[in-house]
Length: 432
Image (tube, rainbow, N blue to C red; front, side, top):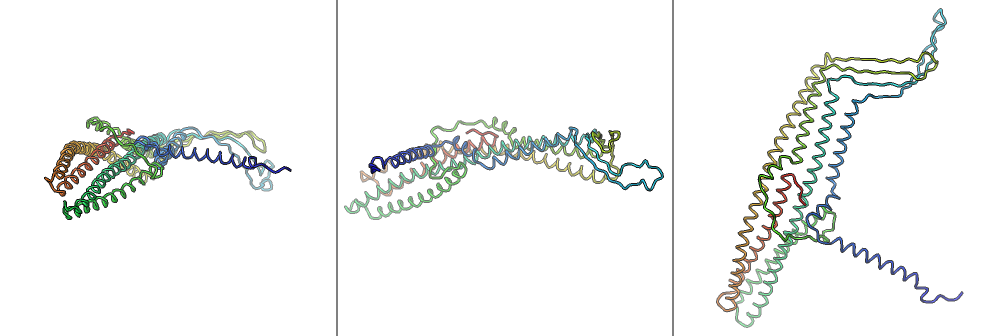
């Protein structure tokens, strides 16, 4: 056998390298796509596909629908296939005649049962289950809205800390440059050492604050990571570029009347009222019809069929029935009170969110004015310091004031967007 050439021996290895490289490029491309910038809508869509609470709410709604079908189908006659085997003692020796029945008999038949009247209890119970199913559906919708609010809160927290860290970095860089310049000036005898120590202290405090904000940012990213099922280190968010659209309070108050949890409360109050009426129906007589037809029997005799109509009227259960009706009445009252509380809470939520939004917008406008003045003051102090008409301490104080106001402005801007989202959710809307 001739020896293998170098090219032929490396052929399989080269193929493996090509496949591995292709897989690496595909995985790296997928990773790059995964860390693309996410806006609030994209974060909500990811959370919606992965949230267990939404899945539980959907499962509860489907279970409620099945309970309704069970109650509804009791109105349909029931059919069953029955079989019987009868054994009795032989009584031919105990009687003078020999016409005794066979001691063993077998039969197969079909039985049907239908409730004719139960005081409309079956109908009322089916209506109650149907209302509970609607309540579960509204619960699922409200779960979607609350999930959007949770995602929005975490999203805005991450944005706020990102902005704050960026501003703190700018301040840190500016203070570091000032410290370097002061060190040179102190060596030349043109500045006091006290000014250098003051600038170094400000730099150290700013770095400490930056570390604190970095820790809060990490925690908020972990929360958002849990919600959207994406590693915290891969989260890149799209910041806002436009101010929020001013809302109208009256429109949101009107929308809050139809909020999902209010509709769920109304459906539960309806279900409790149907349960109460069903309990009252227990005082009514119950009429049941049943019939059976034997399709085969052994020994083969005249195949029997029968129809029975039976009625039952409670005589000595009145205390139990009255207590059960009172219990259902109190449960109906509880449902009505819960519904009233939900309606009042919805109005309060909308008004509180609207007030928070207005406050944030008003603060933002004032802070923009203050930020412009603070920046002008810093530039003036810096120019006067370079001309020898102001101290370094004055310039540092102006810089700290400017950066502090700029940070508050960034926080107010994020708060305005977050308050607007809270207002939409308070009105029963999801606006990703």
